[in-house]
Image (cartoon, rainbow, N blue to C red):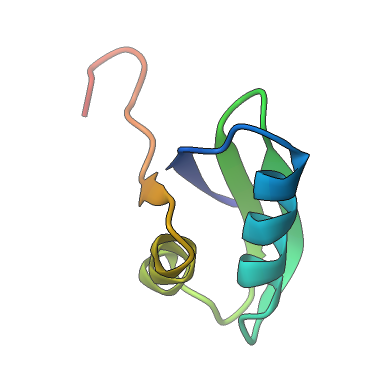
Length: 73
């Protein structure tokens, strides 16, 4: 599973928009968007992080790779 942080989601409509944007990408499977965690996860099956990030940013949200909790990388 791959993961991106998504900033700017405030409601279930935001979750729906991100889910639809990522799910529309060829190869994106098992897309799960969490409002509480502010993240999207998906199975990497032919779709890369940069493609998912671009799809999320195209609909007005900020997307970034999560930071490591212990070393802040």
